[in-house]
Image (cartoon, rainbow over all chains, first blue to last red; front, side, top):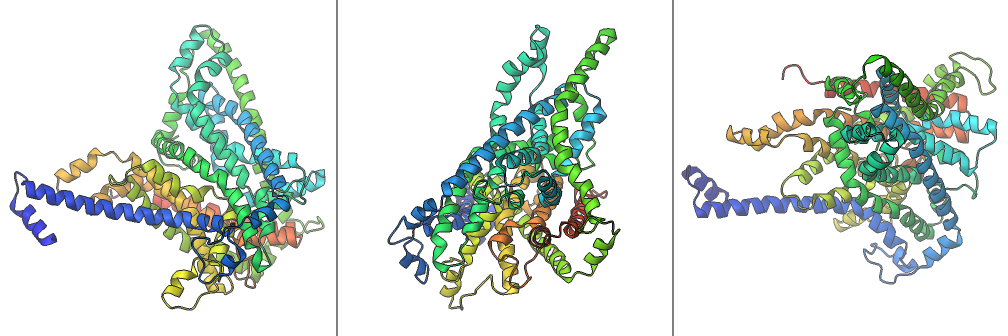
Length: 302
Length: 321
């Protein structure tokens, strides 16, 4: 087929014959098929561990022990889910929710004004450049590098194993990142409208509330979700700062559930399924924001 | 995820500073404006201060404190560089450092390859519904390290897991992945590629979006092949994104700790200790935070050196072009 194709394209050099158009069409479809097949494979590779964990949580013990493992459970049971709730996983979910939500809100309350000042106000340029540049650089530092000093500081102050400690730490850990991303978002919005409002005698705060905030609200929402997911997943700081059920967040609880006994796998699978659920929601909410933010971020060279 | 902010501290682009300047309001003129700008300054500084304090508390205070920790013994006595020199003789540390680097060397090219391939596919005209593909493909990026490790621990499980099923179908003996040192290394690399390649995908996809479409039309008119167009036009365009992706993937893959905690716990023996695991083990389990801080310093240096190298050779355009 390839040969005939090549001959046809070689012979006609001016007007494409209908036959040739058809051939081209088919070639295109073949290519499309290939692309789509590979994409389906990639999606499979991405999703299969999650699917596997989800079905492992509802497999009966017989299915779990079955060799080769079954792709579909024959006899779905909720035993593992009952067990994980008996082990008070809801308290861990509650801890994670409280810590992640409050840390996200406080972080935004701190970083939105900073991003606003960095983009909208006449500050000494060097000051802004230094502060913002440092904020960008610190993102490369591994969190474990700050974990030890913070842990020692926390022990001295006697605030290890408290929920508010986690909230404070998660807030400050994300602030640099939040300021950076928000700054990019603010730079997206042209300032003419705001300036017009200021000219018309609106206060600065009024202009922000009535004009800027509605414009950036979608991005703000996306950033909030992103921060929430960071906090929801945070593991290293929690490793150092969580000692008891009182503060235990979901990632630490999952680690504690990873079984030594062979037959406990259903239980940890159930816990993992709970932890992944918000992530799925977030991925679908965030993809547009992430791609756009990255594209614009580099295009503007911010 | 720490993507956007790393974009700009990197040097090079002349447009950077110019752009930032443009976003500042035009300087007011005259006596009144002096006053105005002064008041504006004060408010602006006040708005920035809270996040600056946060930065100092979590980033600068720890770094400074780290140096003090390195220079003192566990009892708080000044011992100079003894912690560092002990580190150079610590074979466990050597193993951890080598493991981290080995992992970076394997995982970075794999992630970039997978990421670039997927980015090209999703970017092509043949992929309908790009939003859905992107949403699915970036999911691992948002899964907690520990959950990712836990999922793969199940996947690798000799009886429960899926990984051995294709092997069994080929008539091979099932492999108990996480028990032997070399298979455990491969297994962890696979987990890291699963977890981190979406980051490369996302960055490179965003990079591809910036390539203007009309240059391809021009190239097609000139009779350039697809391959040629990719090599000479697409790649130079996405080069900065490529550099960023390389740095971030390297940093992420060398600092991983949750995946190790969930899968091998550093075992068998100490075969899968990486730097983060070493630091955690030394500081928290063996209660030697001062000694562990020396390893933190090495980790910071490694990040810094890798960042510099990548910026030098990938970010900066080759002169010959």
